[in-house]
Image (tube, rainbow, N blue to C red; front, side):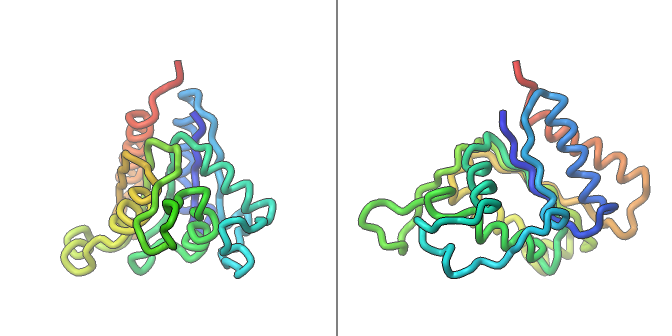
Amino acid sequence: MNISLILAHPHPGSFNHAIAEIAARALRERGHSVWFHDLYAEGFDPLLPNTEIPRDAVLPPDIQQHCDEIAAADGIVIVHPNWWGQPPAILKGWVDRVIRPSVAYEFLAGDGGEGVPVGLLRAKVALVFNTANTPEKRENEVFGDPLQLLWKNCIFDLCGVPTFYRKMYRVIVTSTAEERREWLDEVRATIASHFPGED
């Protein structure tokens, strides 16, 4: 299987990087091909220019590569911190530029864009791993877990991905080395359960 793995965290030594590295290793150990993009390390430009908005726009080569990969992916894994109940701006920009019409979704003939689109992604599974410094009780009671709504309802359900799983690791700032080891073991197990080895 071809798996698209997207990481969005500016610090190379972050726990997000550790999650992404474990995920990539677990996928490759099971015989999967991994398209791994560390958006900060690659200097991904999150700004969507006006010229890219039309569905038939000619895209820059790097954006076209991202679009081709996400369209061909059998599975998707996204890793990012929870910042103000949102992904980092660089990842939101990736969504703006890559999860686009004719790549991830389309509207039926006669629909001018006001209806419900049809999902085009071939991926059967999308996993999202997050980190946070907000305790779970406060996250749910005060903020309503906006990342769950964003990734499941607004993006992957809309784009036709049938299986979605998201895990938040917290509280990072007070976590111990043992807790982090256990969390990384859980990431590995989650990858193995959703993307079993190739025959």
